[in-house]
Every structure is written in structure tokens, then in C-alpha cells.
Image (tube, rainbow, N blue to C red):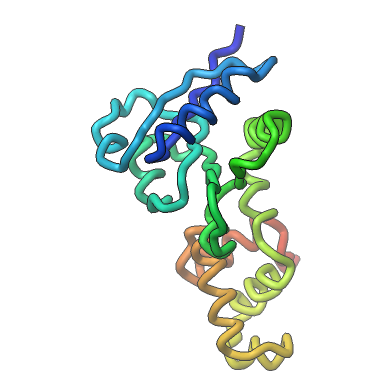
Amino acid sequence: MSRPVKITIIEPSLILRSGIIAVLQQFKGISTELFEVSDFEQLKTSPSWQKPDIVIANPIFPLKEIKKEVSNPNVKCLALLNNLLDSTALKAYDDVISIYDSAEHIQEKLTKLLHEPLDDKKQESLSQREKEIIVCVIKGMTNKQIADSLNLSSHTVISHRKNIANKLQIHSTAGLTIYAIVNKLVDLPA
């Protein structure tokens, strides 16, 4: 028998927390161990041994801080939407569920996250344009040169570079070069 999937729900609303817990307990084929957290201070004081596999969090809480507090570098994070929110705020999450999603839809998303390879996730999260910009950066091109080459504005290139750094947590050209080689974005000369 495999171990249960540890899921932490970080949501200030008791009604929403209780609702998502009721939905998660209905799942067939997924054994879960659920933890409730109503605020960020409670997350800080929760035992570090819990190390959840999945965090379902209200996006009002800072995702970087959540990942730091849960003591699991491989944790998958789902945003729990209960209202309209700017989609750029959700890019850092592995996926999004809404209070309007069906139980089946939520189970599909959780199952997909649990079976998703860790390394492929990062590269898939990059857009084709971001991959092109990485290649230009490791070729030593300036933001202006990249913009001219790809018919973009310099501001757009800077935005793409910030998104790349946030998604990959790589902040140097050397790091991007290694990433590009490992993920076959560029070929090494023979």
C-alpha cells in the first residue's frame, strides 16, 4: 500500500476550507492526509514534519513564503480561486482550481500534478518566446539586440527575462547557459 498524499489547504475562510476538504475526501483511488491552515502564522507554527506533497492555497498568501515554510522543495502548489484575480499573479502556481470546478475536475488536476515529472515541468512552463530569449541571452546579445532580432520592444524583452528568472529561479547568464544545454535549447559544438 502506498503512502497517502499529504495535502495542506491554506485558506482563511472556514466555509471554503471545509468545502475543499469535503471534496478531497470523496476522491476514489487517492488516499489523502489533509492539513488545514487558516492563516500564515498558523502555517509558520505547524510542524515541519508534515512536508505536504500538494499545497492548495488562497493566492492572497505569498507563494515564495509558503514554499519556504512547508519544508518540501518538490511541493506542488495549486491556487484556490474564489474571485477574479489577475492571471499574472497565478503564473508561479503549478495549476489553479476554482470554487466553481467540479469534484472530478479537481481530482483530474491533482492526479496530473502527482504524476508530472519534476524536471519537465520547468521547461514546459516556458513559452516558445522565452526559450528564444534564453538562446539569445546565452549568445551574449543585449536586450536591444534581442528586441531587434525578435521584433519586440526592449520593455517586452526585459519582461520576458524577469519571467524567465522567476520561473526557473536562475538569475545569471552562466546559469541560463547550463539550463539551455541540459534542456537541449542549444547544441554544443563538436
